[in-house]
Length: 156
Image (tube, rainbow, N blue to C red; front, side, top):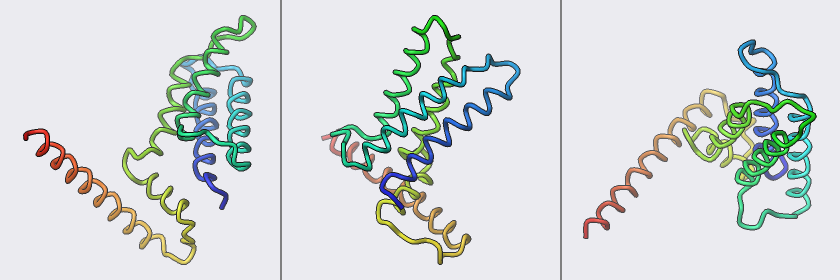
């Protein structure tokens, strides 16, 4: 699997899911197809740059994507020939992708598998689920440990 493929799949999935929900929601103005197409084009450019080693420097791909979403939103607002899409659409895409950063640990676990190029095809789904669960629990414990350590140093 190519480097960062999981992240790019997640980003593209977030765009597609948000577009579909927007189309199906009768209480929300349907955004122009061109907005989602522009986002997809920019993500494809990001993916191509990442594959070619043209990097983001110190910025993470998630940070770059968030900036891309904001840029597309600004372009949409400034375009007099196109209805302005609801801000909530852009926020939903960013929120979905930002969960990769480690909200509940499950996406981090997937990122770990990708980063170390682990082949999980021979691991049963139940075993994989148990390993994920342990990963999340240990991650929480590690966060608590370092939070306590920081508090202890802060009290000195």
